[in-house]
Image (cartoon, rainbow, N blue to C red; front, side, top):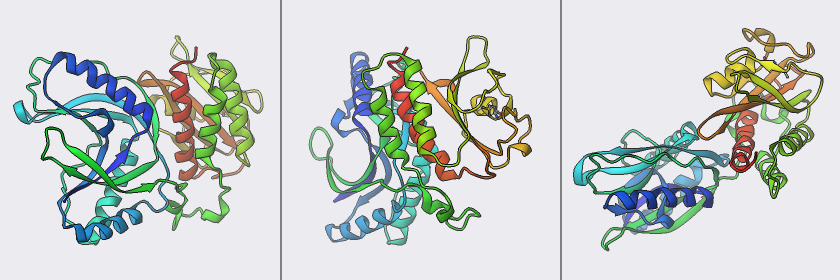
Length: 346
Ligand code: SME
């Protein structure tokens, strides 16, 4: 049987991909992937005897140990190949590194179990259609949608019919909290207060349900995070203003600076680089803006809307090195939930 391992996509992303696929279908003919078959291939195994399925399952189970859900945001459309061999795909603007690292783990575990896999460079994407001449095609603007990958699957594909048919042979839920990654790092996992970030993301979605205004949702989001995270002294939002500065939004904590220049301090750096900033000692961070002199460590996560940075979530602590990579990763899940809400909030 022909096997591959893929990340399964949440319904919202599947719907957005189906919409994009429908727009493309109006412009060009080709072999379109059926919307219920959209996925992100992590490893392609090719022909494998049925007797080896159980060891492939064991390998992907091992690769997913400790792996939590992965926050994805749809990104640009692109194409591989030429003419009848071309493939049109949708990429991601968030989650690329996490998917790449998971694909690396999956491939490594499969390799250790004796499987040969397609070792081409991994570019996380969802194939929308194949076999069309794309010359002159104006790619539509991508829909910006975010969601969580909560499972990966071992699938078989049957290419004998008109459309490929996929069957899930085994599914692995991504339920870890990322803490295993901390093993061997200076921070001991047992020292780190555990926060259920996936639950926090769910609670944030529930808070946003039925509300159309941004301010109450951000206000309660800051309260929710503040309550859930031990040992934090400030939790809040800075939102990009027409002036190009970050302006103070709803928060919990002491009086804070109201405007931060793009690129300044930890918040401005997170916004400018579009990368989460994990700062174990703020006094060593060049240009750190000390709103509260008691603050010693900080984590800042960029928030996106319509494909670009919209603001940041800033969390401070009076403890040194309070935040771990697991916190940063978990907070990105929470921010992904907020980004889903931002699409409809005003
Ligand atoms: N320390 C931040 C400024 C914001 S306050 O911590 C609330 C920074 O350097 O961006």
